[in-house]
Length: 295
Image (cartoon, rainbow, N blue to C red; front, side, top):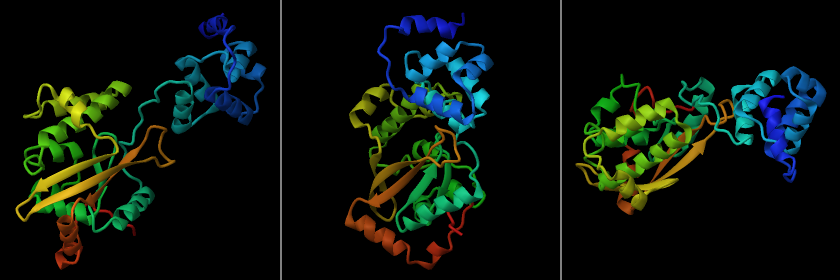
């Protein structure tokens, strides 16, 4: 008797329930043209166990879900959805890929439509994948020459916000702001134990000026799908309200999401500055490898 079947014994008295995993298992088994008996024979288990999995009387092991993924020849995305339906974290495949031309063009539409207000798109590690002219203009006004150079094809949101070479000294209330960002990364790290997120967290905590009690501070100022940011630039102070939206293209895995950071003016002065900046000739001539284009 297999380990999976042994778990059936403890489930016999449980109330059967319609479960997401059972529905998905039955769907993919039917799509593969297999009966419960045929599938159980291929997996080296009993028809009874397959029946219990489909009705929700038994819960699968992670190994069983992965065997089913191989048997049904599921894609990474489909396999991750099957894992999630069984209560397991998806495999870490990432949005850390280069944007395909079609996806890049589609995201470019969103960013260009957000003009004259800044917006950028990042992956799950904070790598900036694409931004609009308003964001590039803001970085230039903040004096971020390294990020604005045409050769700078690698950019990370956290580096921009945390580094002394980035926006650290122009963000009002930077300490609270950085602690709240750290908490967001920490929660994802604890949830997934992803090696790349572990590295990112170690890197961020090493930045000078991060307080030792940053988790305590973060709990007081945390933000989720939005955050306010005020920057002090040579020209003036600018107040921004930012909305963060998750984007999950169907071509990615189940956990392969991008995040769109959309900035809106927090006061009339900021709104007028952005609108006037967009009318200048130099604005339309801005160039950068990560600048969004919808064509």
